[in-house]
Length: 497
Image 1: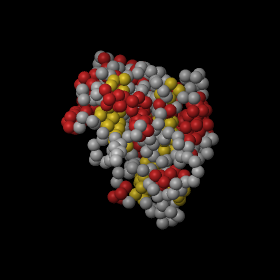
Image 2: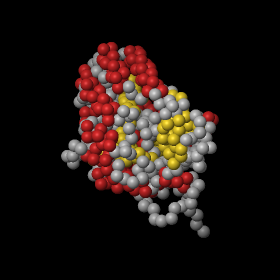
Image 3: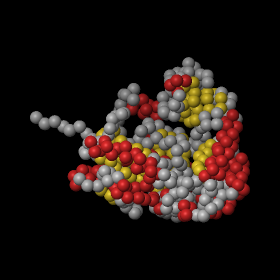
Image 4: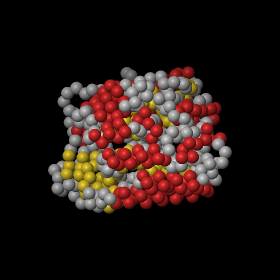
């Protein structure tokens, strides 16, 4: 009589931008394809994978702190395995195993597909495996992927970056830009839609430079228009573009393609021409504001968000005031604001004239106050309007207590709405579309009290219900395509752009 061993469990811990989030979806897919299963809530996994970020100065401290917490658990359970991948692994290589010798596997950004093999090799040989490739092994989208969301998905159009911004280490870790062929991208989107997805976010380090590798400067606008021809695809978004390559054909494609949403995340970084030059950002204030003006002329209701770095080396009060001037002129609906910190390995880390921390903090607080003031004013303009939302899952932390649900409008604003379906037939599920009336505005969200005014149940809602065991399996043959994860509407650390 034989017994079957229980499958090994895994947990993936992710730090950083959308690229890391999407890579973690692939890591989960690879592990499940190799027979691993997710660990239960509160259970210690047999394999813990850290997918790291190197953008922040203290990224390594954060990693080693987390690793040290696992050291006694690993000591008590030698069969447990720890793997470290991502940008910090690409940068630090064997340093990780020197500082944390109990780590079993270190792998880079270019060979995430090797993880299951490296784990098995480390187990059999009983020694750490370090494998860092200098160039892409296979395009990541060809790998198995575990998609958490039934209704929304990331779709990578490119990896890598050809820019040389002095504050950013990403190009040296992820390499030069590599573009997927348009047909491959569209085939993936069509398969996702067939699987119930109704919203995709096109993802690239500088997404609008897509096509540079095969010499088509209008490839991205063509891709947006092609997305408009995919039946069942309700919403298309993209992140993050670069102002230097943002051309009018992209604006026209956004405005003329109904399922491309009126929302744009356009990194500014600084409003000072002098600081932009020091950052090696190949645009200036006038060009940036010109793009914003043309986007608003084509799409008056577009919501525009941005990234801003405060305290870059050499930044004066006049430079900072120039940034505030751009924020006032652009009237962003939100901004990711960062206090500059040295990124080891970047040109800016060794620049003279570093700004004192107390000055950086003061400027940061003033910037945040202005951003919030403008975002609140812009949100108040929506009070009294009807908005169609795609119902989301897990975005309203207080929804259970307030008896509300949450969703995103076409412009990606977050709305918490009253779960009153008395005037419609049925109730909404994640992925369904509801129409609500906005009654209250805050800087970072909107509220809609009162009954839901319209409900459109969608295939995405059906797919969500199927996952919950609330609907029968559909008849027919499934595609069996790799699945893709839920895109965070705005990430903790946006893709550098």
